[in-house]
Length: 430
Image 1: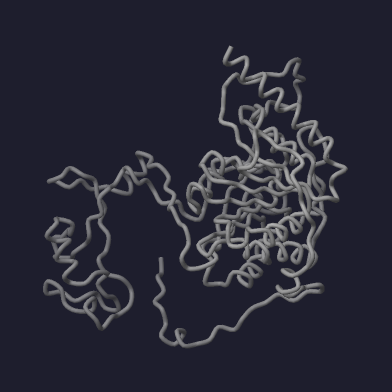
Image 2: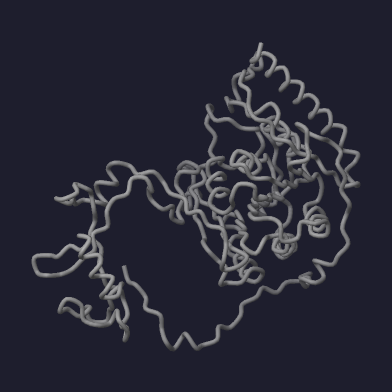
């Protein structure tokens, strides 16, 4: 694998800016100063007050938050917006969940307006994750660079979203989507995630055993590409770095490693650093994710909402880019997977959605709990409830005044779910 060396010529060359032009593109000032709707508490779930679920247009909710005490207060934002598929989506019961009708410049501006407000809601050490597929991900990458700055781009993650597709006839199977990770500044919360080691992979990566300590290790070079004129470009132990390279460490530091028994000397006198296996750390997660598929099997627990994301993936994102007590925001909340992950990891959360089915799914998640997915063919003759007692997630439902007419069905489902939840608790404790 080739490794590039920073060019001195490029260091002084000014980068030409890139921007997207389309009809209807507003200035940030126009977006941030527009009027917004008011929201009020219309339902209290599990005692309320700790978290907030907004029912209404998410741009209105974001502007409401921005102007009511939440500016620079949110540590982490994850959004999984519509993918510009020009489609309609239903839940497992074939009830309408949401429309994905926008495309082209209209879609870009729809999402850009919300991203600009979200940036203002983030703390200076906050981060945002934008989840899209290949349809609009690369267009929105330019928008994210524009809003957050190229320097604050952290990762472009490729995720395997489903099992292998064998029915694709004229192209490669579409099994991936993408997650863009940006921070608001250079100083951001980062708790690096790790994957547990598999035995065979550990043996492959750390093939040597130290005779003294019996610990496994691998050998890595102690030099790096590029010449240097300072300490790392000088002679060490009678040797100069290979041509076109420099020592990764100063000679004094290399002496320390050698004294600690962490330098391997080949029979020809070539030094390499011994990196020992540390089983507690695991493998740092890279930018290709193969283990977080959304494909549903009959044993998985789900709300039944379409496009429900992998819960373990959301827990990893929340844990990596926030700390306990922080506020996590998802303004395309859907089934509430982000909110559930935040609650389980002791974060506060704010969710927003304008779909009644989304609100129902989130209430179900935090009152009755999730159901086994099962199958579509066999008709159930009974409803099965788990008899466990789980912690209650308290939240308020905040409703935009224009949506007050939709409150009765939400209130009804909330009452129904709370009654079922209380019944479960009574059974398990009795």
